[in-house]
Image (cartoon, rainbow over all chains, first blue to last red; front, side, top):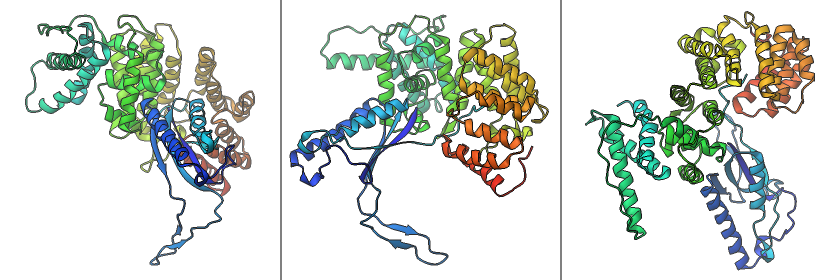
Length: 135
Length: 384
């Protein structure tokens, strides 16, 4: 029982095998892609492994504290940001093997030509609560 | 109304329904419904016979559900009428339920969820909150688990070891949300110990009580981890320790040693010591030797190296450590500790920082980072 984050990137991940930008797909291919993602999430809920799934807008901003009584400083968005996260799925699974298996399944989502994208997904384990028994 | 009393009746009520011929999955749903109904109506109108009340309500719910199902399928099967209410059968079904919910065909997470619901009487929502997953996901996990064990015969003896592993997992999950899983694991293990006479069940119960006793001392108010050596032993729960030790001694006297009894023996030796220095480390090493024999676990060997370091000095501990695989979880943390004791703070600081990067949980990571920081800033030595 461990939670993993499956992270999708707009930019920053190694190039996918079927690396065609979405706007160059056919509308039917986009629909098939969306359907695959929804089905995948629904299937995970059925297996009792789904925790969360969210997508992020590509454009955000940077914010930092600028001292007592001063408004926060904002900056960006920066077009050149190397690492741009597109969204994620959180799963709760029995083993790391299972997390990898599911990530691979998600990475097989169909893209251009209806063929799998083979997209690289980043798989990150959550830090857990500390166990009661440690020695 | 006593919620624990109510939930403690769950397995026997469910057992009665299954013995009357209800299938496990439907019976389990019916018992949940009855529990919810009890929470609603008992405060104003407490029944004279709580268990009889639960059996009657659950059975009625089961019949209603079965009839609805039958109608839906346009079946003409006649459903049996409610049998006369009477005393519960003498057979103890509780044990069978533990076996079923920890059946080897289930994954660990499914077995845990099913045990908490069908034996523990917790609601799906409570279990979902405790494990930080959506309620819908937990509901699916539980219903899949029920389907998995649908063909398992209820009267077959099961394996106590699988049940103990499930209860150990629940205990180790600790506390989150409004359900205290550690306390729930103790309750369920106590109930199991009442249903079956087995030294390892007693061993696990003792182990849980001995660790639970330290709970108040093992975290700071802001959630930081306090290592065993630095805990305020005055805050350990002496009553819980006394009970754990008594249960353990009775188990050990039967001369059928198992891993939980050995782990409990180590916890008992810690509980017995007024300070770290006064701890009987030689005996602890002996128990780790037993544990290595029983489990051949690399994690046990790692913990043994710590004990050797205390019993025979840090050099001996480092020698024991050198024989182990350095990719083991917490290897770097143990190495850091032993190097600091050996008077090499620079190496220790580097290893503490490495251990922090590899720590599997937040409290441990923060603790290890603090150790590295303490050494890097030339702070005071580790408090005794």
